Length: 284
Ligand code: FE
Image 1 (cartoon, rainbow, N blue to C red):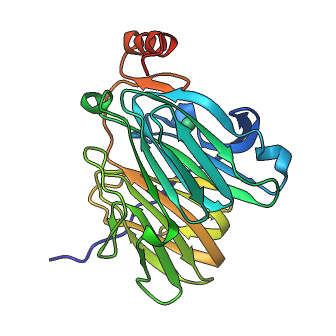
Image 2 (image 1 turned 60 degrees about the vertical axis):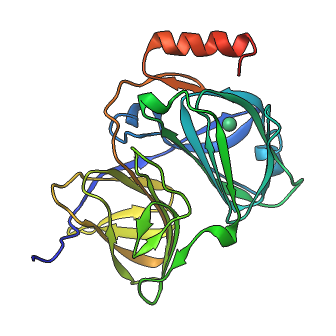
């Protein structure tokens, strides 16, 4: 058997867009609308990071979702969520909320702090057409419920979803088979990172800087690195310049039409209009 080759390359470096969402939360939209097909099954990635209360205090009051999943990963701070089915939970540093909106719900996501740092990510993951109307569900995972592995000295990996380095993550999902890792590399560490060849994949560096692939192209903090879909590649080879932290997010593309209006993501315009009517008629 030949040796696996970790030869995905850095295809494109993306700078996020500073914007506001919810009732006025400042954030950086890392994965924007125009990348939804290239990074299918992922629809959006936001990075919120501020120690200024005016950037986050307004939070995300009651709003609906239908047709996809949201994955919120907190690095710092506390956020409480409540929904119209009576579910409630507190998201804290190192914790993850995996919400399957499915047929629809109305919820709020509000900071439970008056000051200090609020930092984390929200990822939107599409559902296959046959799953868009499944019953909504939640999983609240505390920091100690996220499996961690150290494949070599100087490297720490939290396996949020999927499997890596012989470690099963906290969440497994059918169809899109998402791989969601939070990695920490000491300066100079080189790592061969396994990624299923079938998946669209990207890295988001949030501390330090990575050199990616054979040509060692740089991906500094605050940038998303879209990885090439190299045939038969076992994954990507990265090296940290100084202590570095980054997300690896990968998933199997659905290759289905995407029809989005705000918080409704369906396959056709008619289905989106139906979602708006159902929401207005209080059917969520
Ligand atoms: Fe939401």
